[in-house]
Image (spheres, rainbow, N blue to C red):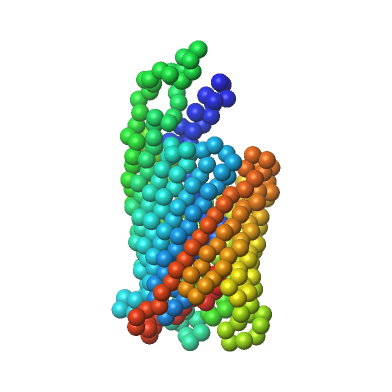
Length: 328
């Protein structure tokens, strides 16, 4: 009973006081405009559009798992000099105790530096709604010595929903075979407390990502490629480094990454394995995070699924420069 009481206290404190972190995707390039708003409008078919859907179930072996569902649309338009994007995200933590819903709009401006090098600058505006189901929490005054949690609580409960704006920005530079980008999320560090505390901020998240595509069969449109890439993410006291690669051969795609946390909470986190396929304008991927830290007995892994469909523009965009890599 003492352990349960302490876990309840920890949950309440984390909801009201802790500096939270954003949901993250293992397949971060399968959620391109979530990773960096500057990637809006960088689809591969003459400035046409694309829709991406991502689903992540983190540590399903634990009670109160984290489930994130993300859907996005983006497309390039010559008339506005760049791309637009829309993101809708639902994140559920703690068996439905805490739910976050986000709706975001993005604009990215394309700058053609020279014939080979292109840059994009993105700006994202969000509306975030968070809700807390107080009925699923338990308090000490609900405990009956013989029957357990059966009494109504006398605790003063705060409002169960808060809504706030948020903003992000990013920059991207790329050639036919190389790309690098930098993004800053949660620019204004919004307050997300249900208890009215002013120190419960969502810290800024800084993301640096880069990579290249190496053709293996030296043809104009290679059928086999190797794509090493990296992602470095910093949020508050947490620093994370992902290193890995894609290997594409025809319609088949495989990938392997290693995730390491650095700094204050240095820890070998997970190996991430991906298998997927591409068929014309459709892509599908499944990845599994294999926990390699000391938490692997309780949380051996996480599942993630992504799907994407693209379509070509009815009229080819003249000023459009596609992002060829990452290729998946």
